[in-house]
Length: 607
Image (cartoon, rainbow, N blue to C red; front, side, top):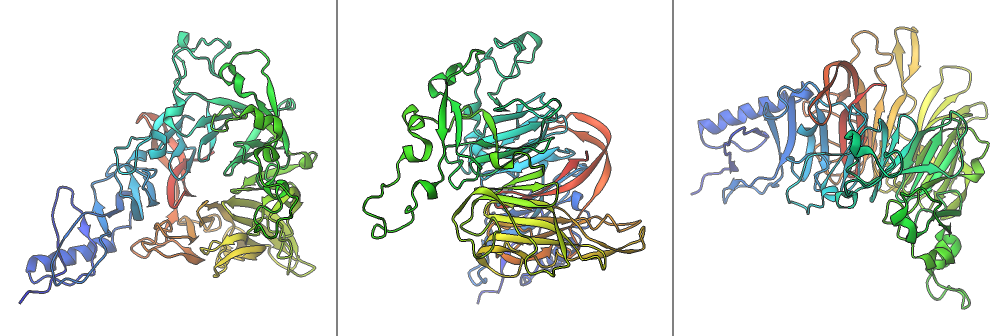
């Protein structure tokens, strides 16, 4: 008769302790191993920076009478990773394209350390489906991922590679084919998301070369990566510069220091739902792209990007409903006849090199812009929000009575529905990602302390609305639970103060990471900032070790059951991604970012 056993634990160099909770083996060694496992898990996350959690898919020996269990198990690997790292970046979720780390498995169930970023503090980080990019302490851009290097899934993968240097970059935005970088001086650069498309022959002039024929080689500053500077189609005012960028699937928004809003078409699909805010623009002629670096005047092609719903109102209708005289879709109807005849190639980073001011927002002082997948938003200095673009899931937030598929003109979003007449509602910030939109609003009626609510609209099919419901279309902004109307006692003011969300990161794939500023009024000994998660969770992107969407905002916990809190401190030393010390005694703080089916908590240099 076979003895009951679940599995045999194997030992290997730097072997981690297996997760507890299995039937004991009939041996003293197995019982001791089980007790060690329980002890290891209970203390695994007391010091987050000193312990790495990751998922292993290694094969195990399974006895024929053992109960069936999943091949994916949680391991606690103590001391083998980032033993001496003062700053540790934590990652979890999908890692199939190696956008989180080169050594971690394809699915990371719990927060795990990434050795790429040991003792590294960044200025910004962005993760797409197949590639990722970041800005290190020196302001240089690094890129990595299978989509960047061209590796197939499961093949060898490389560490982050330096691509754009010496530009003092402060902010990044990534799309499927592009990486946009904003410098401290207000310049916007664009590079390809693929390393193969960045090849640049030695001596080739670039925007960094002065004069145009290139002298970088003379001073040892020759560029090795092809990139383009994106400029405005009209001259900016004296002292005016770009201060923020935000990119969707095929379009990008840019905000200047004077509150002017510009839009940039990334591909020919940039205005499929009117998200640009205009139709007519111009792009370089395809025949002249090879000579685009030369200083002479370049021919341009007029482009008219017509929204799909306007070009073909019956695009989604059955043939029986389409009128007999109507024409079906054609390329010329969407981009104009001249552009169609020119044969534009939007895969080239020089397809469009200009930013165009949104006509309807001329004279409107905008403080912040946010781009969803196919929608656009602008928050004004008076606390109002204007939205335009795709609206089939209600992501613009215009209410249940507005069923238009596309909103082609910036339209004000009403955020005070179902509130008393004496209640004053002001938008503090706006966030967008994919088909989800969130508004941070302040409500005050004059009788007490103002409160902060988080309102959400759009596609909540995976619980991203945060209202404990699964709804694939929500046109009226709803109040997210557990993160709205929160107060805490302030020892400095001796009264209750509203807990304000510091930042909200919305993934294009439907999960949300919200950071509550629970440290501001905590007083002496205050811990840190809580991370609240909800939404899609098919790839463990919520960090709770489970698969299953969560429709209610939930505080992220460590495996020990403690609150996962983001901290701020003065680092002894900060290194760049080359491993060289940048500065000592730098003030840094942790920042949570929602990527493509994954999440990252990295150390960010405080501005």
